[in-house]
Image 1 (cartoon, rainbow, N blue to C red):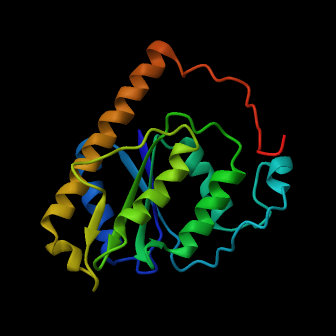
Image 2 (tube, helix red, strand yellow):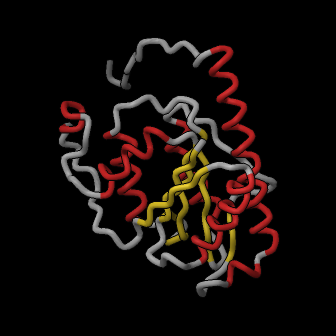
Length: 205
């Protein structure tokens, strides 16, 4: 089994990385492979609603989004991690996730999702909610922990002092592992839930 981790921080060795490393320790113990993609310093533009991906299956902008799509397709779990900027996720990460989730045509049902947020002080819960929406619109179960998945620290390395936050990360990884393994067993026994044909509507017809 494998987990894809997206680190949205421009600091590859900052507090967001500290949080993910704590999860990686548990995944290693459970023999879960991890692959981390650092996108915080990449030039990733937002979606322009061109619709090209609906015809080609890939985003028209050939960057880290298309490079990561294959890893997303094959993963059992997906972690989106971000520092908090103005009570929101890093704009680079939001642009990346918008395009990654929209442009990839494969079924994401029952891939386990988890969001991780890191802040100096506040804005964690708003960012946590923001990131979880990518999973809940895609049929992806959301892994939880003993607390909301946030860690505190400002200067690089300060997150190491947040004992509760790091424990939350370890618990998250354990719960995520349990979910992924349980879903794999469920697929073998029962298959995926039967999907209905999509019935798109909007409010003027």
